[in-house]
Image (cartoon, rainbow, N blue to C red; front, side, top):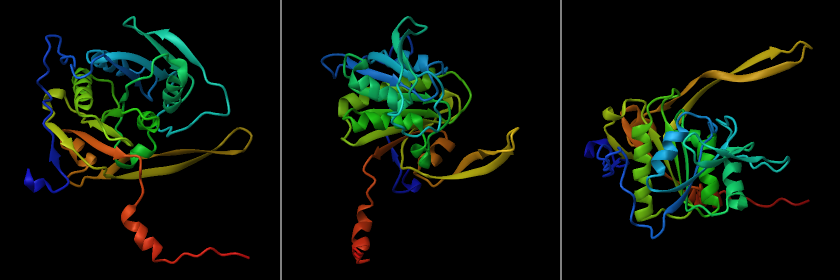
Length: 289
């Protein structure tokens, strides 16, 4: 693997060696009490991956689902303060309780932490998103925003996404997510950091391994679509082809394209520390008068 470059690492997470007869993972014994895990997404409470994802996470902790009542894809990280928010209790198809909210994914996390959910979660997991969140996508993603909201509030978080926009068998990715949660519980994450996980769009038995990656460079191919309404006023759609990316070895884009599960550790502190001295040499002065 040395030929793959200095940014590439292999991580020894066994992806096909799940240890229970039900196809799941063994319950973690690291925590003295069961982890309380908040499960959310940005595709909405009725998104097909949500229930199998939640049921897999049930194997490693106690879960509560708190998800939007409709799709918030590419919603970014809003904080709804100009209108009221709903948080309606519901019963999921497996009989477990949850909440559906009129707010964005980040609002769902905020509402839960502010007291709608009685117990403060130990971990936030968001996903599994229908569609990847690679490279610059993290700035647009509602899935990632939910994880970020958790980290801002001092709670570790993981965002999970699939490179496929189609519903599929999520058993393998969901069980892997549960296994990764056990690793996080065992080793912990630094403050101000979350994990961004992307699954390749291939059958689970064809997934090669796990790659610890860096963010790649997305290439967006947006186009402006201009139309007129019946009253002659212009309105616009942002359309275009799906984004591509630069598949540099060691990036999340390269890993997913080559059949690996990508795990990218992401810090919220985006300060360009190395450039600060260069910026000081610009000798920027305050102009008055």
